[in-house]
Image 1 (cartoon, rainbow over the protein chains, first blue to last red):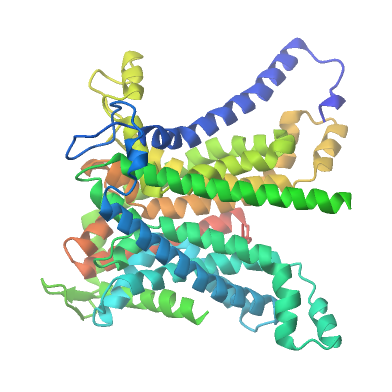
Image 2: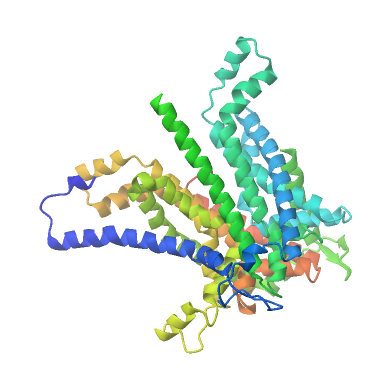
Length: 284
Length: 266
């Protein structure tokens, strides 16, 4: 684009252009600094030496230690909460992925009469503040005669908000899907179930996988909706929120860094393997 | 689908029912069609309502100010690093929301380096603080919802055909004109989606205010959370929550009409 620069350009205009060009880059770099500042703090402060303090508040730097990483599960409450969060996220996103995919497929495969209504119901949970979702679910559970709030109610809540995300993600993927492929498979004698597992599913798998990962990360991180429906069950975000009033041990940062490194690692592996596969396809 | 109806639509009905009830001290509610709960919630908490919308508005504006140039830089200057740069936007959000916000507490704390530098530069008074101020809360909100602004804007910028910009140049537009007449209008859907995705959660958020703010920065979310989970005043909390949802729906409708964009899908 810049090759087409007008040859005669006044000095002032050129200067303005230079500023314009580099101001954007500079601003973008500042943006990245803003995005990464807390992450760097988390990573650095996970090595903060707060041994010997009964109620450690991991806000000021005291010294370097590897001890926190050697004992990441020192605070068993935090570790248990982490396990619970992982369980909920896994189950909730599995259920949500199956249900959301079915909604998306049904919506694009068949011209449902109430498509726009379904769309509206799918989008509404995304345009409602979490606090309204959480509190309205709580009123439902309360009116139903207070069943034990806990694991099950958290699960219900998480599936509720994940389904929307899954359905919308998979729908975007399915939009350009060529349904005649299914007809072709059936013409070749494949029964409907086999058609689904051998033709439809592999083609929409990337969308489903993305949706699953999205719901997993939403679910494991959710605090606002969860806290309304948790009863006495403690998930990792709830544990952190309750804990931070009394103490902020560096193990919180260690666990957070672990999640970060694992997810970044998974993404890196996924990207690299895809790139390798693509280049192989391209060369063959 | 039934799940959504059952656990999204039905709860809203119950929320409305609870909002119209009275409760006894132990938290049992009975439906008496007490519409006054709504007006009470406004008169008792209007400052928190207004503060929430003000914070959410500022947060949205800051997100656009930071996010738009960033998305623009990735989309048009990113070259072959586009995917990597975009990935870097999302990476920080793989850590827990609460831990991220706690990290801001570390950065903004009173004897931290940032406050010291700002005091030395007289950007803050000698006893000036960052933590527990409105700016800390707004900064936290902006940080936590920034990707929801960057991603939709990026998507809409990415869709723009570079040929359009070249055509504009051929017709003697300078780069500012081609931005204003071509790029900006075509990226409006992204700004629209992004501002909804930041404004709505920001208006209902209470975590940033609880961790980074003080009693002077209480948002409406803090009130709902407190009334539901601490004082167990379910009807009033339900009424507030319902009013919040209604106001947001009205605002979103007005906003949608004003910009005339129907596409909500990101």
